[in-house]
Every structure is written in structure tokens, then in C-alpha cells.
Image (cartoon, rainbow, N blue to C red):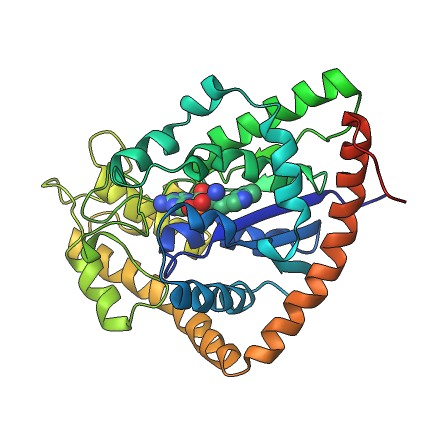
Length: 332
Ligand code: TYM
């Protein structure tokens, strides 16, 4: 039986957070044996905000290294840079013509980003979900492993696919989001009612995958909790502690009940130290491997080029089919 297809991506903006890792990357690693996986660096999506070109280039290469350092085997996965496959943007144009302004207007990320970048509300920001739909639909992806914040974008991708299929006949496969049961929304350490975000201004709110041991200990020690001093899972009344429990449970591969038991009768001091140690234990080997990989950028590009070769064949076949269906003349 053919393996199911997975596609996902992360934007090449700055250093990733523990949220990106636990909500996305960590799940990707678990999927690599069972599925035919396509993992891209979403560099085109980052153009919707202003970047320093040199830094964007560097971030893109770094992210390839990070994918591999996190455990993605380049022999098993197709790893590539989004902009290296023009078919994504070509399909995106076609899909734009099958997406309504009203649908895009409802996207909560768009509204959030407009509020954050009020001086640069460009049309790329508006049509961002259409490019994301193209990324997914062009590989006939069955599953898309993402965090909770991308769920709405998956829904619009399905709506666009369904609309196109109902006009032109079965063209796109319906992709399903794959959202982990825990960890789909890791919260900020200072602000545990909003997601941990790369763009958070307060450095104490987020754990970066590049943080030192000392940073990690300091940030967890200062993490906002409550006055009960009891390690108990209750998202509504104890969002800070519950978030730390989620982080610990994923890394230690334990259920929330097991975590509750483990820390029964212990205060927050011990618990926070244990969470910090677990995160350090996971991140240290990842950081070491990451730094080693970055010593050889040529090898990283070779991995990407191999990925591009495989992915572009698949993407171009689908694009041609779409062009034919909508009535474009194909030069064969
Ligand atoms: P991006 O770069 O914002 O985030 C990458 C992945 O990390 C997840 N994530 C989180 N998960 C749990 N807790 C958090 N605090 C947290 N913060 C981020 C995100 O849900 C995401 O899975 N538009 C996408 C990139 C993209 C894409 C695609 C994804 C472009 N094309 C096609 C899937 C399929 C984005 O900006 O993710």
C-alpha cells in the first residue's frame, strides 16, 4: 500500500521557539517512518513582513539545519525551500481566483497581523492562506501536522479544494490537519493565556531553541504560576502551571495524570527545576548537532537540492493538470 503523504512547513523568521518544536517539528519526526513526508522552509511567506535580506537568507539555511538536528532524516524526508519550486506560486495564483475576499477577511491570523503591522498591511498578508493552500494541495497531502493556530488556514485550504473539485472534477485531495492531542498550543511563560510566539517582545515569555542552559533555567524559574503551589492541571484557573505540565509531559512522554502524580506534594520550585532540566536535556543534543551541521552549508544545500528535485516533479504534474482543467494552453 502506498504511504500517505504529509506536508508541512515553518516560516524562516528568526529563531524557533519551544512552541514550534513541540507543536510541529517534534511530531514531524515521529511521522517520518510511516509516511511520505514533504517538509519545506516557508521562505515566501516571510516576505509578508519586512526582513533584512541577509538575515532571511541565513535564517533559511539555519532552518534546514534545524530540521535535521531535530531528527528529520534527509534520506527519509523530502526537505526543500518553498521558493525553489515555482509551481507553488503558480498554483497560488490560480487558487486566488477561486478564493473569496470574504473568506480571507475572516482569517484571525490576518486580523492579528494587521493589528501588529498596521504600517504594512500588504496584499501578501491577505492572500497568505492561499499560498499555504497551494503548498498543501500541490502534493496531494493527506495530513498536515501543525499547531492549533494553523487550523483555520487548513480549513480554508479544504474549502478552496472542494470548490475547485466541484467545478472541475476530482483534482485535489482533501487534506486533514494533524494536530497533536497535547502541545498544539504551547503558551507564553509570562503570558500563559496567549500562545508562545517567536515575535513576543518579552524574551522571558518564550524559550528559544537556541537558548543556553542558564537562560532556560532562568526563564522557567520566572514563569508565571499561581498561589496554590500545587502541580494540578486546570487550564482555566491555573494556565501557567498547566502549560508547564504540558511541556514536561511531551518531553518526558508521560500523561498529564502521570505528571500530576510525580509531583504530588511538591511545590512549584522543584517542579519548575524539573521542567527546565527536561527541556535542557532535549535541547542540548539538538543544539550540538545544529552547530555541527552549520559548519557544512554546502551539504545542507545538497540535501535541499535533492528534495527540490523530488518535490518539483510531483508539484509540476499537479500544476499542469490544474492548468489544463481551467483552460490554459499547455506547451507539451
Ligand atoms: P509558523 O512558522 O508560524 O509556525 C510553524 C509551526 O509551529 C506551530 N506553532 C505552535 N505550536 C504550538 N504552540 C505554539 N505556541 C506554536 N507556535 C507556532 C504552528 O502551528 C506551525 O505548525 N503558515 C505557516 C507555515 C506554512 C505552512 C504551509 C504550514 C506555510 N505553508 C503549509 C503547513 C502547511 C506558519 O506561519 O507557521
